[in-house]
Image (cartoon, rainbow, N blue to C red; front, top):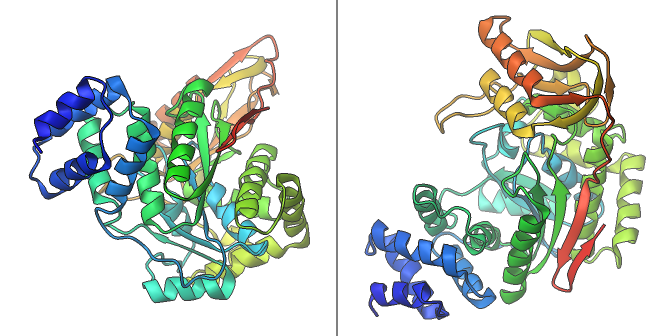
Length: 442
């Protein structure tokens, strides 16, 4: 078949066959199909969309373009969790040991961060001695032994997606829902999960700015899961402000530890319990969401989730003492208070701006070659709905040096806050859940 005929077919609103999509993905991966033809096809998809069958075929073709992880030697139903990204999102650090303590194996591949803040792997590597590279046999053995392992993502996982995403980034086709959905799900399927729980963020700090767009993306990903035989559920959660209070690698590990001890921020705890409960249900260890949530609350209260975290850290070479002594984590030498210049109520916080502020301090990467400083970051003291007086501390900067650069970061943090006379209406953290049965809105 001619590639141009496939482009014409999609341009004119036709439905592509799995064979046609497979030819596109394979040809582009090998370099037989040039960028200009693939970008024309991606633009046609942006305008014409894709059916659930087409999106599933694209997902499977991209998943099959590189390594595929076989998790069948691990006992039980393996449930993976994916977040579409957000500022202060340290949920994997909590959900991994929490769900594992409830008897559901968590065998997870995570990535490093590029942009606002570090990724899960960066956060874990802020723990002295922790290593994220394990052989396949050691990875599987650890999950069978203690129920949990988190390692760095394979460099050859869904390489076709990596190549296509780079093209979409420079051709104005990133916003296509089917292409976003297949990008996320191809990596999850290649990583070997039996079931998948998705945390789809919406709001000013998220890629999907509206609930409608977030639900559309969630629907597309859940449909892919159904098409390819993976049970999938998606939670739509608010990212109009950072999750929790800590932004920065070691700071987020410390907040995750507090949450595992039952002393974490209310929003972070609520989201982790919700995502974890869906994982436990899909993993077959609870019949209903409410039953699973109560089970997980019990694991937090008993200390079993914290014990699992300690085992996990020690199994991968890290200093398990941090579970009880978080002061052993890297600490920045200085803190700078960012003070409010007016009185009123916090009406909004630009989460993305705070993420960029943390990156400027060294907590994230501007380029893939940037070196992360595990100790630096931002800790919020006030969040949306809180009353403030002029001179109150809105946030603390954790910095290496008290210099002009740090002062500019403080100005950016101050500008991220909107303070008004009236107290804002409360916006819920959990907005809806999408499953194969439909959407449940809260």
